[in-house]
Image (cartoon, rainbow, N blue to C red):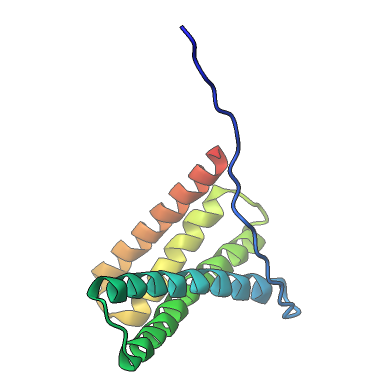
Length: 146
């Protein structure tokens, strides 16, 4: 019986923007802010474009609303990423090691800091810290597998 085989690879384009702030901590934090902030803005642009096409109308007011929402989402997600990257780098420097524990500790610290800035509920802050630490650790393990 004849059979076929397909072999190939897929790689995504890589865009790197280097901004030298004169400090490795600041360099990594700004890099995380810019990369993930751009992803957040693109997410909003895609969602709003779909909504406009689905509805069949585009207005100046809707475009202005979309741009404002893109900036807000980009700034929020960029800030979260910047805090996380900065925390991981700081933990790595303090511990003197580069391993999955840095992601766990950095994620937990970032989750607690961001949650604490937005609410005063101690139980929610602890839950967010545990969740962020768990997600960061899982991502680190998944990156290790690939």
